[in-house]
Length: 325
Ligand SMILES: Cc1cc2nc3c(=O)[nH]c(=O)nc-3n(C[C@H](O)[C@H](O)[C@H](O)COP(=O)(O)O)c2cc1C
Image (tube, rainbow, N blue to C red; front, side):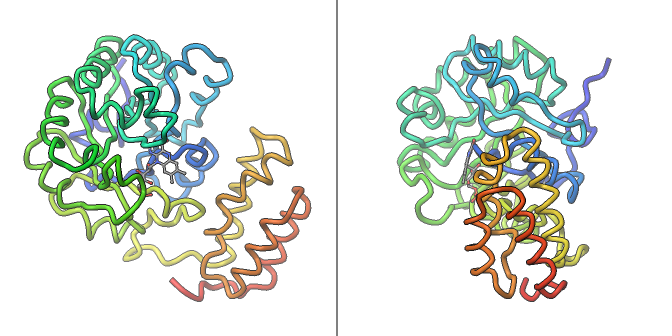
C-alpha cells in the first residue's frame, strides 16, 4: 500500500510551497493544540513536542505521545536522544502508528539535554548525528528530517554539518536562526539560512521570531517554508493569510479557547488541566479592551467552573469585534 505523505504528496520535495509548519514545542504542541491549529489551517505541517527515544522504547506512559487524531495529518513526530539503535527502534514505533515522519532534534540548548549529548550536542558530533539518520532510514520507510540551529558559537560549520546530514539521507531541514550559545537571546538571523539553501538540494525551512503567516512570507526569500513557534501559543490564527481571512473576532477567540481547553482536559485531571492551560491564555485575550485584568483573573482561577465562568463573562462584556490587529 502506498504510504500517505505530507499534503498527500509523495515526499517533502513535493509538498505545496510555501511549507508552513507549527514548531515542535515541549509542553505546548500536544494533540489538543495540534487539533486546534488544524481546525483553522488545513495545510500546516504539525510537529509533536520533542520526545525521548529511550522514553518511547521503555515507557508505556511516554508512548501516549504517539496518540493523535487523524485530522492532525500531515503530522510528524520529533524525537531526541543519542543512540542510533534507540532511534531506529523508536522510529519503527512511529511508523507503526501511521505518523508521516521523524524529525530529529539537534537544536535544543537546555543544559539537561546537552549534558546527555542530545539536542544541540549533536551539532558537535557529526558522526553520531549521521549514524542516527542512517539507522532510522534502515529501520523504516519514514521521511527523516532534522531541526537544528546556526551552529554552536557561530555559523562557520553550518554548511558542512548540514551537507553531511543531507548525504546521510535527511529529506528536509529546519534551521532556527540562533546559535546554541544564544539560546533564545538576541534576534534570529535569517541571512545564513538563505545562504545555506543554495548549498543543499533538500527543502530548507527557516525558523525564528516569525509573528504570523504574512511575516513568514516576508522572510521566505529562496527558502521552501517557515516554521512558527512562540507566536502560535494561544494564537492558532497566526497561520492564516490575512490577505484572505479576516482577524478573528473576540467572540471567536473565546469560543476557540474554550474548545481548546475541553480537548486539553480530556487527557488531564481537572486541577492539572486548569493550571497547565494558563500558558495558552495570555495570548488568547490579546488585544481585548481589558486584557490585563482578564489575564489576571484567568490566571487565578483554581477550578474548571470558575475558569469557564470567567471566559463566558469576558465573552459577554467584551465587544464582539477585534479592536486591534
Ligand atoms: C516552550 C517551548 C518549547 C520548545 N520545545 C521545543 C522542542 O520540543 N523541540 C524543538 O526542536 N524546539 C523546541 N522549541 C524551539 C521552537 O521550536 C523554535 O525553534 C523557537 O521557539 C524559535 O521559533 P519562534 O521564534 O517562532 O518561537 C521550544 C520553544 C519553546 C518556546
